[in-house]
Length: 358
Image (cartoon, rainbow, N blue to C red; front, side, top):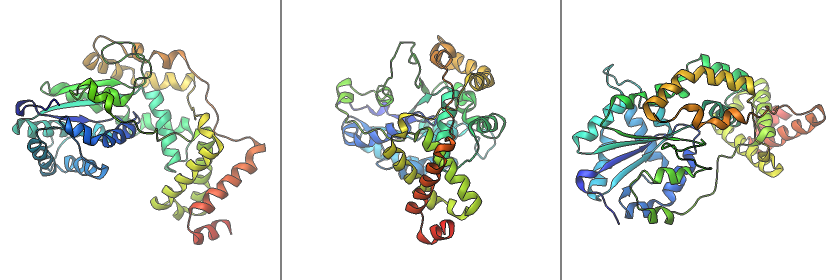
């Protein structure tokens, strides 16, 4: 066991970004929490505790963080906190109008004699937006087509979720903070080494100063967050549009969660994930890449100075697939409506079902 000395204690922050296997990483961290603890890395046991720490940063409350620092001190451990939403929080300005939240956290840690190491996973915007759209549709949160969604993101208030300098530029001004930015799904790792489908958990674990033998002992977890496929996306859009027109109250959070589960089960039963949704074509990919070209180049200069964006994400340019339509054929229209009725009838309260389908 290699426990840290008091002068070496570090807060490891895994900060996303979104849609970079964060849920898989977090589930596997928790499954191996005991092993990690025995080898000098403490982490909260439940997602709710990470959520409280995320909220505490937004409210500029050090006390919840301080309690975890004390727990780690008592156990002679480093501390690991993983939350993908940290990438969208730490760059924001505190109530004093000057200090960034990431700097606020680093300052508090410094006063406690702790270091901060930030680990982020970076995904190219094209595949990110395709994945994010699929997730939002599955959650019944949007009803637009993919092209409209992309245009809205690039023109609207959500621009920061794709602009890497906006998300991570605050780290450039804090040389005392160690940072590692890992290309997600790229041709090379952050050191320029060729890689083929690396395991994100392994990549994060490599940054925790753990012996390789310990990392090999970590138990696996099953894959989750599988997209429902092209037809699952079509069904989710159909259900969302139908309910918005005929019974908007059915689209409140508790009902949406049950409907989402029903869509996922139907997709699995019919094997729809075998044909993943793809909204990208050559024109859309080039439009997205042009929009973020300058920011991506600056990000590479700051975090990956030996590489260019195109070197890392070359396959996105060379292997452009044509989009697959979410629309079912006319011959399948009756089947789509039958699936819609089955999911609604099986997952909403009977009183609502009677009003909708009666």
